[in-house]
Length: 236
Image (cartoon, rainbow, N blue to C red):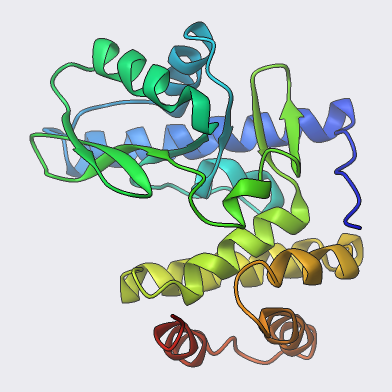
């Protein structure tokens, strides 16, 4: 049985909260400098909207795993995995707060796009995949504000993005960089048996693949994102 995630210490929670705020600030700074026409939606505001609506969610993507990285980075959008029974409520709350955004409802996500750029700025993810159905169980509370994936779930989620046949090639490379950085920064803290069990939710043999990736990173080898992507293309 996979062990339930432990709680953050106060210092760890502060680190993850500061990582999110830094990622959000970097993103807003980039948009002001290079995309001034873009809609400015800080991650903190999306979190506030969902909390005020009583939505249960976990912050995913860069904002969710930034505290596990060696340092935060900017990102294009705010990704939140929404509990299935709260999805409609979440969509309603975001629509009411940001009525100018263009809504695109897909099987795995309700996407809110900036009409000025056409880019997604908020993704309300649906727990459609087996790995995402476990995220709420393996997440940690940050400063009574929001939840983020625990270390092993963060790695499993990043690995899932790398092998996803629907992921754009350039984004897979970014996901690969995140995966390597998280592994290097937390190598001694990874619960390997737990990570391998989570990986097996992705596809048969994923545990062996993710273990090899970690061993390669430990040995200083370059992560072969292309080979992993090709494996993902073969998945049913």
